Amino acid sequence: MIKRILFVIFFFFYKTCCPSIVSSQEIQTNLLEKFSPRIASIKTSRANLRSGPGKDYPIKWIYVKKKWPLKIIDQLDHWRKINTINNVNGWFHKSQLSGKKTILIIYHDYLRKKPKLDSKKIALLKKRLIVDIIKCKVYWCKIEIKERRFSGWYVKNYLWGSGLIRID
Image (cartoon, rainbow, N blue to C red; front, side, top):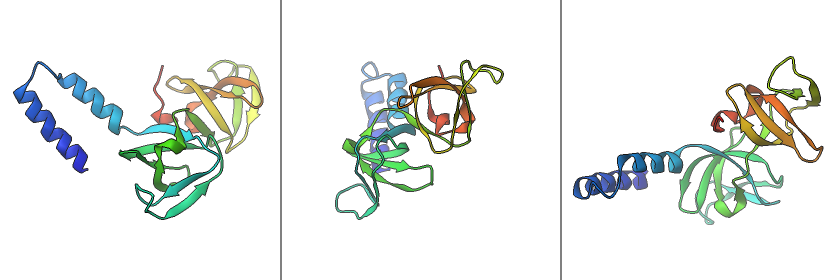
């Protein structure tokens, strides 16, 4: 919070002092990129979720599932505050996280060849399956299950965290 306040003060000082150097569009873009929630996944096979942003804070959970999807909801230096599907909040060091977008199936349904309900069914996907996101449209996401070599379209609302994925 203090960082944000200092950033805003700096922005207004800089804008009035040197308007030709930094555009307000650049500042808005930087703010949105830095502070908007986003999807990430666990990079390591053992990741410590801490109660605060630092090694001195106690470990709340130890995650042992690589590629487990998370929502990054805040950041402080090298630490990222996350939220999980079970609504658990905590802090991971950024070295334990990957920018690879994985997502969880929250309702079982069929993976389809095209983004239409009447399209050919490829496979029935069960709850809590971790899948990779290729791209999303308004109502559908193209996903991939590398272990089974499947890829196709799935209903976007049936995927946890899909609301944070950019629409192509």
